[in-house]
Image (cartoon, rainbow, N blue to C red):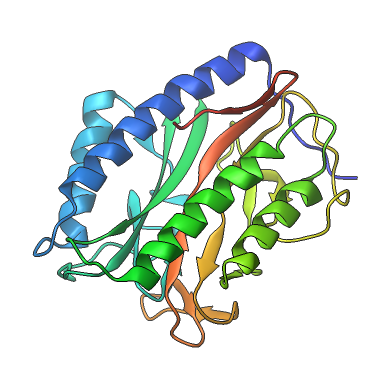
Amino acid sequence: MIQIPIKTDKEIEIMKEGGKILAGILKKLEEAVKPGITTNDLEKLAGELVLSYGVQGSFLGFDDYPNILCTSLNDEIVHAIPSGTILKEGDLLKIDMGILHKGFHADSATTVLVGNSGDQVKRKLIQTTKESLEMGISKAKAGNTLGDIGSAIQKYVEDKGFNVVRDLVGHGIGRELHEPPQVLNYGKAGQGEKLVAGMVIAIEPMVVTGKWAIKNGKDGYAFITKDGGLAAHFEHTVAITNEGPEVLTR
């Protein structure tokens, strides 16, 4: 039986403070995205924002990761390091970031379509991934199971004609960036760990246009789709409470 850390109400309040800061930073990063800038430009801005808010980047140094942000493009799913790559009209950019605030981590991700591309497949992929996260969050209630979350996400995504990545998962979060349990984006309702008040989890569907098989990217950190299909990623840090799910990173 895995031991899942339970947070006090006070600890959840601290995590909510951090989550609000992270939401503000991600919003500013999203607003800065436009054709012609590089993902390094976004990393530089993230560094300035982290300093201005008096928090630390959670990813920097985690498993030797060298940056504050993960900036994954097109067929890159997650964990790509910022670089000199120039963003182009129609690029699908995933921005993933965590911060450490008063001893607790918050983790969140968003997907942005660069420029004013009218690409309907990319727009549908983004919308589906975003909505599947909300479906998962709606099941994050005390008394439900982790399988209820994964099953809701998987069904929603597959009904829209896409697939969820199986080899990358969400996680518990708190004093450590990654804590038990693993939060799968697929599964059977009613299976897995029971959710109890005080658990805090990062729910993060990663959705692809093709098959869900993945491989390592060239930078040594990124995971990309094996078949070159496009990927989208959204993530929120969510507290399980007796009143229902509380999203800490809105």
